[in-house]
Image (tube, rainbow, N blue to C red; front, side, top):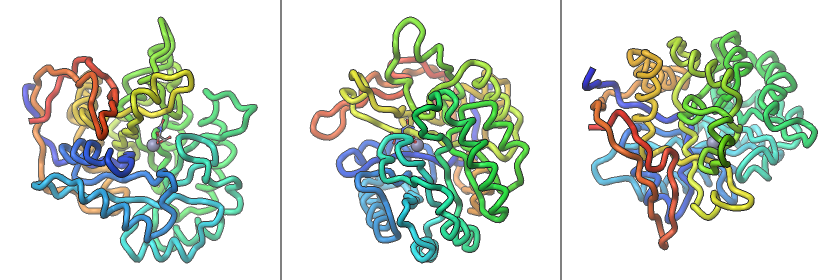
Length: 343
Ligand code: NCD
Ligand code: ZN
């Protein structure tokens, strides 16, 4: 196969950041995606409908002239989120809210400290049809970083899904066989997003022969058996698994550091990386469902009508991208070959 045309995809999990960086991130996402679910972990976070609408406007200022890219900005749940805030946001077109356990990842210090206190908020979300997006990791000091997703599922997610059966839940950027199995066996109201890095790599790639800071993201890459389970999940063509890049830029100096930030910036070649993965899996026929149908269906949003075409042609991810004020981002897969190119 030399060329494939698919319905224009959407990204159901992206970090566009704010201010000057939007000049880079918004066009990079818009080149391939019709819509992106935009994460609210800014400093300060996107706490209510007003913050979300203002952030959406800043994103739209950076949309390329000929693009109709739609950012779907999400709310950041905190201990102070109220059912009224949820209903107000829903009435203004906000489709989802994100649960970060406090301290789980980049800019999550304002996250929820006690999930059991979120009942009124989860009930309001189930009631008005707002999706709950979850960063599924416990933050307990005693729990090993490689076990944090599995323990979150056992300790919290099983209970949430059981208690709020009408709540639509997306377990974001899954990294383990435990998560893939949990989602597969759960009700139709539970789904998961998968990133390029967790499908392409495992923790050996991160750590053997030298530490690779540009492969460091949260939840952290797991062992090979987990990577294989994630690959099998997407190759299965199950509609519960769909595209979410978790594209999350950090400046070069913040990644290549004694205490480096978590996050991989994949937007400049995201759909191409997924095409490589699906080709390796001999499942290119499943790419369109994963990238363009299942997420929209799960969110209850219309599928896109435009298409994109990918050509089988080698190119390389840039090794560095210069953004505002001469800051540099080293993207995911920097300088490495990609087999498909967006036409
Ligand atoms: C994300 C970020 O940098 O905002 N980092 C990451 O490693 N994935 C936050 C997140 O999604 O966990
Ligand atoms: Zn993320």
